[in-house]
Structure formats: C-alpha cells, structure tokens
Image 1 (cartoon, rainbow, N blue to C red):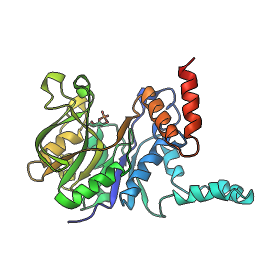
Image 2: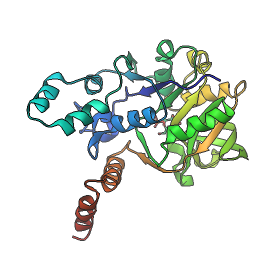
Image 3: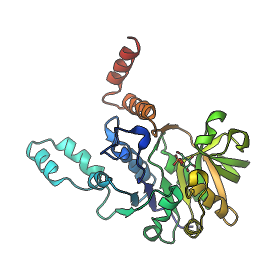
Image 4: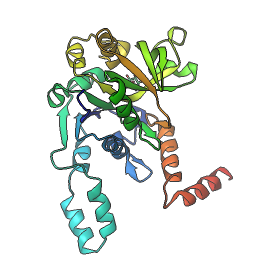
Length: 290
Ligand code: G1P
C-alpha cells in the first residue's frame, strides 16, 4: 500500500459568503485567532505526515503563496531586533523548500474540477484533500486519524460528521453500510440532497484520502448539484471499483464558510490557546454578560 504523501488544498473559491472581508483578501487568509485559516489546515496535514501541498488557486490568491514563503525583510528585521522566539515560530511552521505547488483553476467549475486541476502534480499515488473552509480540532488531528485508518483498510476514506437532519442539503451526505471498528463501510453518497431524500445525516466534512483513479473519473464527470462538477459524484463512480470507508471524526469541526462560523472558530481557538485562553474566556464572558 502506497503511503499518503501529498495533499490537495482547493483554495480558488471567491468567499462570497464572507464579503466584504474577502473583497481583496483570500478567505483562507482570514485569521482564526492568531493564524490564517489555511495555516491551521496545513498544520493538520503536516501532523499526518504530508510532505507536499498542492494548492489549487485562482485570481486574487497570491497572498497564500507569499504566506508559505520566507519573508526576508520581516525576518531580517525580527533578527536585528532580537525577537528570536517569534522568528523561530515563523521558521518552524514553514513547509520545506519545494514542498508547496500552486496550480491554477481558471474557472469556478466546482470542487471536482478543482481537485482534477491537481492531477499532474499528484501523479499516480493516493492523496489527501483538505477543504480549508472546515477546521478540525482534536487531540489526534483529523487527517492523522484517517491515515491511521487508511493503514488498516486502504482504499478511500472520508471524514464524516453528524448534522441536524434539516441541514443535510448544504453538504454531501453518505449512505452508511456496516460498521467496521471505528469505520463505516459506505454504500453510497449524494451531494446536497433534499432533506426527504438524504440517506443519512452524516455529512462529508471535508477531509478525504483518495486513490488516483479518481482523476480519470473527474475528467469525464458531468456537472451535478448546483451545475458544478462535484467530487462526490466522481467518488460515487469510483466506489464501484474501489472501497470507500467513512470515519466519524472524533473531535470538533468548525465550518468557517460563514461570518458566524469564523467567529465561532476564532473564539474556540482563542479559548484553547495556552497563553491567551484565560483572557479570551474573560473577554467572552464579559461581552455576553453585558
Ligand atoms: C463541499 C463538498 C461537500 C461537503 C462540503 C463540506 O461542498 O462538495 O460534499 O459536504 O464541501 O464543507 P461546498 O461547501 O463546496 O458546497
């Protein structure tokens, strides 16, 4: 079984749900407490042993590329001022030289199309996909839980999370089969179903381990829900020849796709911060008590 070494991060989205904050700034660069959202996602991938990050970008996303590069002037100034702790943090969290690739999705044709844009950089090996809108917090990070499961069963694994039944139409939803330890064998999946047609309330929560055969299927995938080329539809085709398991993720999921979602994530990351957590708690209770 080939290990999962590369991760695809689709970051081409316009972020219309958080306008005007995203008018000139990519939504992935908005801070979740003290780091851009994308930083948290890359950290999760690194903790799972990912060695290469493939960002699928679009117009207006240059800040992401710069963020994962050295900032010579800034680092030089920090060094001159003796701010070594800050400098060490910046350097320690930077991916290795050559570990980031950027491919361009020229038109917003859907998540499936975005993943397909990464095909040449990923090549013929299993890979992870992390949707940066979804932040996951857990003692063992979500993708690490998934790579551990992948080591046991191989094939394809996607993270899932229970949501209230009335919310299923906003997500992809799986059709669960038998339970196998911590995993659920999947028998189907559907993108953004009507509440009445949803096969479960287990939403596809934004972390995937996929076999490279998905690329050929994405190439001929016709548009689905919302008129977009959907990853879920291609995964359903792949399921005919390659097993799919769902991992109900043990931890907290934050959907930062909305203004209040960002706020919730920021508050939670602030509360969990070892240095500032107590102060954040006092600030939040003070605000609520007004
Ligand atoms: C995408 C996926 C969907 C998944 C969701 C999680 O939808 O297509 O299956 O449940 O992310 O956030 P999007 O949010 O891009 O509409």
